[in-house]
Length: 158
Image (cartoon, rainbow, N blue to C red):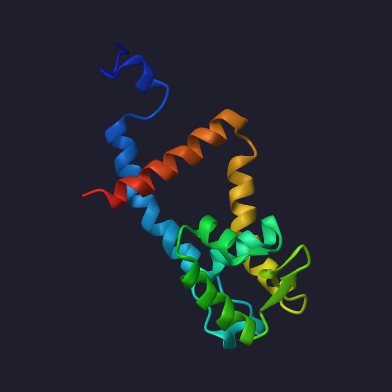
């Protein structure tokens, strides 16, 4: 025991209840700040929503891919992604091209015209995550990501 009545492991860190309190207060502030990230002027007329950010992030970080691959990463049905891709393709934000190795498949990518605006839109969040994660060891990063995933899964229970 430490002198202030906490266990030694809590004296150096944060107790579970204090952690819960802190995160319950922090999460709404974080979500509020993320929601205030302005859509670039050149994308404002496209009626983009937060669900589009994840799709764009996968295409920016992982490169062009099929609708099925996007659906798997987004954890939604391929029909849902197909509708989003169709809508964004008609608007010129995304490009759909036949896969050279299998003409039955379509490869989705961000159009060159809109790539800088989308990259800029995501850059603020990516920069904040980079500043938060770079000081951590790879093991600490893994634990942090695993903890956020466990929290997300916990929200689905009950």
